[in-house]
Amino acid sequence: MKRYIIALMLLSEISLSAQESKKAEFVPPLNFPLVLSGNFGELRANHFHGGLDFKTQGLTGLPVHSIADGYVSKIYVSLGSGYMIHVRHPNGYTSIYRHMIGFVRSLAEYTEKYQYDHEVDDVEIDLPPGQFPVKAGQQIGWSGNEGYSFGPHLHLDLFETETGDFVDPLQFFTNVVKDTKAPRAEAFMLFPQRGTGVVNGRQTNQSFLPNTKRVIEAWGEIGAGIKAHDYMDGTYNRYGVRTITLYVDGKEVCSSTMDRYSPYENRMVNSWAYAGFLKSFRDPGNKLRVLHTGEDRGIITINEERNYHFLFMLKDLYGNVSRSTFTVHGHKQDIPEWNPKSKYVLKWNEMNILKEPGVQMIIPAGMVYQDEPIHFEVNEYPGAISSECQLDNVALPLHAPCELQLGIHRMITPDTTKYYIAQKVGGRFKSVGGKYANGFIYADIKELGTYTVKVDTVSPRIFPVLKSFWGKTGIASLSISDNETGIKTYKGKIDGKFVLFHLKMLSSRISCQLDAKRIRKGGQHNLELLVTDNCGNSSVYRDSFVW
Image 1: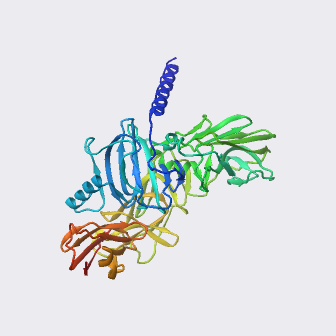
Image 2: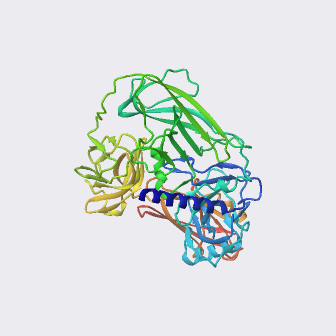
Image 3: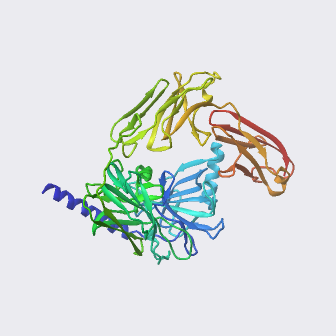
């Protein structure tokens, strides 16, 4: 009885939450027909796409509007998202506008004053409720292509202020975004479970196309997955599918509706997705709330010699539906025991300790989503700074960063700030940072792979770009780069006074828009740019120019 009452209370809360969601109203962030280049929940590297990408007709500098009444709660100028604003709304949501090229005057002047007062280019400013109130439809900025962006667009996030959950903004814009096209299946995959299932005599994952004439035989426990995309009117873009439901012999096995997720759930994309396929079952350690299965986790048991009829139903927010079917023939086959050859198997629900002389890594429970055999080997090379630690043959994502410790065998330089841990990727090395303590370098890593210790004593490079045009264009541009640990900070001065520089993340181009309010126009000026990498190596570029 007690469980029944608790269930009723939870249902009541969900119903009230749904009613509140329906009450929320938002206006478009752009004042022309809305077309998406990306939708909510699309698969990205190690994360879900957290919002909507609106096309801006291939242009930058278009007005961006607040989607509801509220106030500007945060201002960012960052490498990854360019000019970015958070607007907190009284309806329980907060909206985020990314990749803008700039803010409206009041916000721009406030931000610039903060940057000059603190002599910083990248900023994160928290604001009180009364400082910058906004109305629905009020302009807050200008669209752009700033930060980690591959074309002009506006990225809009929407999250519940209280829970921090990201939610699908499209549910509030169905009246202004047209969609009459149904999602389409592209391929299927069957996942024989280790030691308990086989497909066509093998325990490897096997994919096949819709309407295949291949005979698919299975026995024991298997999972199923699908590769599919959604489509919308007026564009050739492909999108993630909102709702996927799997039925076997008419019985629902698993359903998912990508309508929300928490920041904690973000990296669980690495469990749900496999080679572009979305699993219609749950790995033991995958806690994604959008996945709905029974106690069997969506695993299908093939234990009769007959045909099993699979049906995938795909549905978008507008109710457009497609159905795809295939048949698996139950055929009794030998199921080999799961006997991993690896000496080390990470347990998904236990603490894991990987330790060899000069190497230690602790991987807490919940950092992998199922038991994972890994190849853990330590290799020694003459004259190397440290051992080369192979934590797996291929990169295995972890749910959260875990600390790796590598001992130093040979001190190349007494300056311990110059040492860092590097991941070997395709014959090259990528810095993951690190700090020195008691003969070891410590760094948090987000995936298993091959790691070693490197030393960075090389300063960043700085080159002027089209210097002869600085005076004509009023823009001083330079190229900055660092091949080892990457750029950490930069700071520019003209005539001895701090000036703002803006770094284009994808091009390594750094520019200063010369401002007559701060720099006397007409005459020669002295420019100084200090650039520092993540191991503290610095370079200074000094030059003069006429403007």
